[in-house]
Image (cartoon, rainbow, N blue to C red; front, side):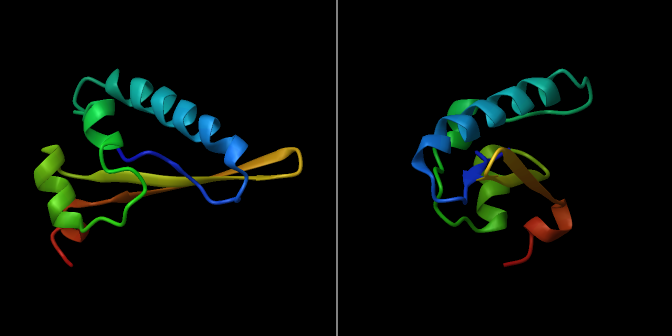
Length: 91
């Protein structure tokens, strides 16, 4: 799981992205048959653009979850995307 990215342009929301990512990671890690990469491993990539196969190999996972957060007024929009093993092998 990669850190969720703040796409709203408000730097004050960065903390929310990190907190949301941590909470979701902890929730997913409770699922017995699901292996979740550590926070340190996935946050090491930062917001740089990554190539799917490299992510799979470096994190030791079969699929990757990525997403964005955006605050518009009093609302927060969360968008996530799971990249399957098939997508991770293409460049």
